[in-house]
Image (cartoon, rainbow, N blue to C red; front, side, top):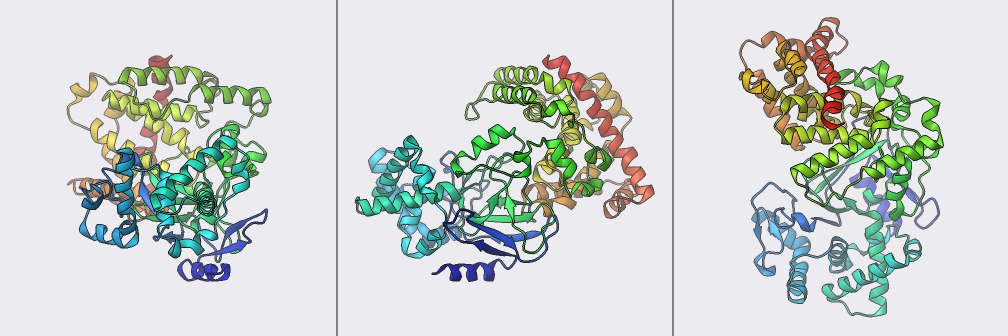
Length: 542
């Protein structure tokens, strides 16, 4: 299949995008929009990846075909249950796709090393090698950057070991030709695979699609990739004009620039986007974003504050300040694979808060690692079942961190933050005030006593339900959960007037009466709850 035939295949299946450029040249290939896209529009859907499976940690609890991690699974008897499925339909589909060839591979692995899993790069390599006749032309279109991998001698030696393992388990002859081929494919896997990690569900694994892999990186992307089971969605985050390049972020773009560049190390390029070139902080990127006006229909400090945010003083551009923030960020990094005790979690949270004191004093709440520390505080309070403190810090994050870090109101990070507030409200609105008062901060308790928590919960669920299809998809579990909770609150008798006003506000957030109701019953109580958070954190963590 020639490159032009690949491009034709792309055009037939993904009419909203086209491949631009030539493989192997310095500028490489990219995806361009074939029509205009508005924020939240679906650009393309990818449902036939070259490889998609869960990581080793979740391999025993996740279906290896549809990638549902919530279903009851059973094992393939042919490979001693190394590969799991949720249904006979998934088993048959995966057998036809790859497992008929992969099944004996796992038997060989079990015999050789006594394990029923392979490292992710090796398993991806094996899946491609055993189907090489089918996938060769598609894999050949991917960039591999092999020369750049060779420059890193230890990494290259590790990749050679992975290549030999892939050759052996795929049943290929262990000669120079297969080593050369396997190293070439491994370079392409490392460069082009996506990690399906979801911080909310814990789902993780690999996803390799030859078309999606052509999307280039920017730390100020105009699009985002989202995963649901065996699908990937490419959605616009900003307005994209016909003919413009579609960019996504390969990394967490809220980190300081030095750590972003370190994360991009394996991709073999230095990012020169505006955020990196001018070392823009989150407030400056927010100020310049074209999607700020969309924040009328969500929880935010207001469009005016987003357009004129804090954090623009000249001193925050000084090298000494940047070095200080980098040192703080380094101090706050911990081993994410560790499973600390509750006491250890508190000690880490307290240490992070104290390290972040310069950011706290400057009120740069949306800067990392302070924003991450605030999220950690909410999770800590939830673990203590101190719902009032968790509500205060979650409201603070929703108003003073998330809108600046993730400007589009439909960003999944913002919606999951709102859902967290909704779930906490179901705990703080209980009629047993005495029980709540045992752990409640008195000022928070006073705010809750005079607040319409039902309207707060109702409005937040409406915001999530309205934005989730643009931020992810109709398949997203968070959307389904929000709809269920919304149905419950809308079935409560005696709330017909409040329900009508909030639904009208969703349709037209500029309507004076409906906007006034939202601000009085929803936004102001949440602002009041958020206002208490810094005082609580100083008392608990300083």
